[in-house]
Length: 324
Image (cartoon, rainbow, N blue to C red; front, side, top):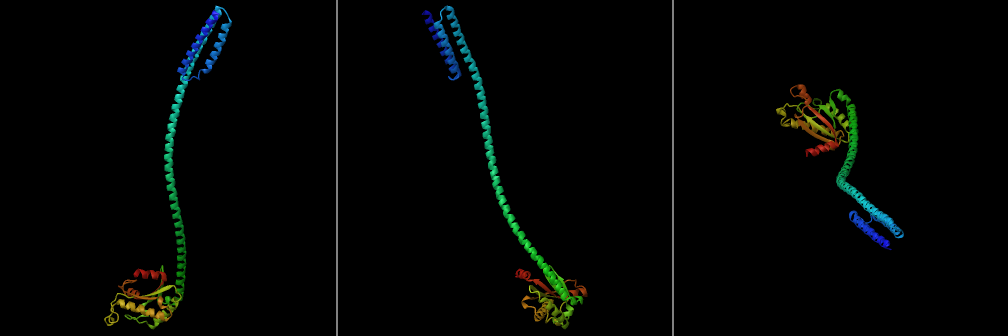
């Protein structure tokens, strides 16, 4: 019985050792669950040894049991120390991993901030590009409209040019005999046709009365001009720079009055042969629009002339607005 009591005491010592080991592990490991499985295994083994100690007799057996218990306790302590070292390694690794993750998190936050800033810039650029695109589309639409208008104007100008050419050809053909005889000239300008009448055929020097031979030619010119219903017929008188003779100054104080009187008489005659008066305009330029130098008789003869100009009605209206 004494042997059994000693074994019980020994068991209590073992339990105290286990409790100390458990407390030590809890303090070092800071986790009671980490060594719970080992402690359970130790307690099972200890109870087995305790049962054997109660059953067996003899000092040698007790001594062996005591040695086994000490071995078990030592093993338990050593296992606890090894587990603590592993935990410290794991804890260091975890701390390093946490630090790495925190650094990665900070880098990701910085990257996110940068991407959000870039996104804002790109959104602003996209808005500007969309606005610019809309403006370009409007400009393209306006350009297409302008191109259409220009094409239409080009077609109209081409048609007008062809019409002027046809009119010129018809006028030249109708007055070909007079042109060949040098009685008149037909000229084509950009927006008008002009018939130049030689002064000596139509008027005597210093006079404004039409000569009989001039009337025959002018009648043919009038008949050729009647067909141009969309034209304004402007008759302009021109003189050289020779002053009016004293005997004629009472009627024509200067070349201004002489040039206007000649143009007016031509307009009246054209009206008589059938040209509508609302299409006729008379004006005089005197000696101030020469086509040649006045220092020779030939030059002065060229400057003494009557111009009959066929002008588009739209151009004539524009000229009138400019003058007014």
